[in-house]
Image (cartoon, rainbow over all chains, first blue to last red; front, side, top):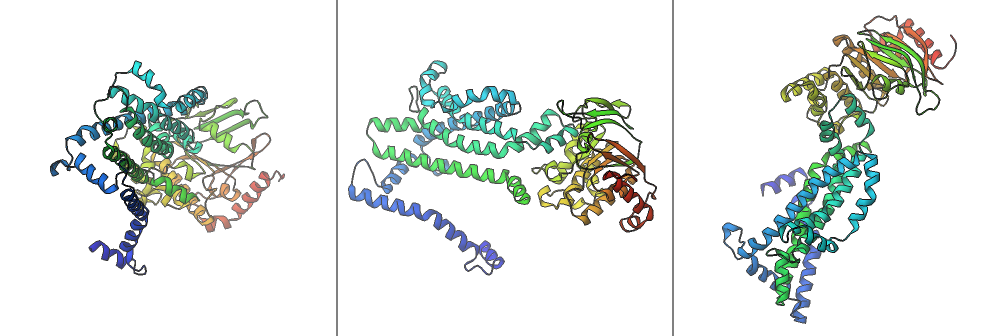
Length: 284
Length: 251
């Protein structure tokens, strides 16, 4: 309330104030979704198909399935912590390792014209191989279970990060490079203070792609043999007993998680790349 | 201090950009280099800075032949907006090169603050370069060079992209820094007035290939000011002479 009055007084001309604008903005953004869910509810109630449960039933089922735990555990029950957490853990590990390896290799390759020229065809080739086709190879190479699951995530998520980093590293401004040279910055200082920040906008673009790929591969890798837990495992189980409500719960959960992660990443990017936006604005 | 002898350079076997250049800059001297476009000013500067190895002759700084970027040299580039790092604050931009000087974090910050104060930007330390005007950004890159404490300062058309009023302020800043710190400065410019106003000596270059046409001692009093000095008959005479030399007219 205090915040609302304060904003109103600072913007006296806009009727309803900033708080009103925010509310309207949220409404506009969520209105299509609300209408869609409502229409979905009505359509599924009318058709009464066992394959398409109404959203309300899905929500209720989600609550029973995952959120019936005690408040101290954020209402998460054993089913949720035993499946959602391992999935997210593997995804986080896969994405973190992809980012680390992608950025390090991207810098190494991007700094050398020759390395890039030699390796680019190989990387483009490897990038377009759909990871599912590599499963037979991974089964030979890695232990079934977590090792193979994380490997599938990495093999998919690393490419956009690596290729974008290599590209971003090459776009370092020649005047900035000459400045670093005349002030005799060490190789480490150049990478830390010049090359990585220059490549950061491109790295983030790669990271966004890698994020959605790693979510997809997270589920996919849990459909493989040797899986004992995870959201994908829950999906396979539900499928084998034709438990349609649970299948729909997993679908909705994945959508929510994807949206949530992307929003967080965008917020981080917005914060980290303020200089990038402002410097471009100042230059134009 | 700086001794250039028989310097010549050509890029990849093309016609030489510089040829047979001999130049000496004494300790504490402020020498300006002026010349028509295409006279090899920037190639000369890059050779002195150790950014490129000349194809002929040598550059000796403080008794050591330059091979790679020398430690006691700092450069102020014309393009301040691309020379400063937009992701670092003004303070961090100035402090960054001091890491190699073995200073710890608080020493670096202190030295940066001192340098910023000497260019009149004590209050801008925690701002980002893109929050400042062009003239202020160039002050930051001058502060960065000063904090580095070089014995030799190279300036590559440092005021080529600021407005006239700012330019005069920055010129006076260079004179003030030169006087206060006794630094040896070599400043490249395409502005004839500026070369005379700032220099103890003006070196005029000719082109095709880039070479020294003439060197003129500036006999103006050491203390200069924008109004008085520019009205001085000696300034007017020197300006006309340099102008004639730059345009290739015999005097």
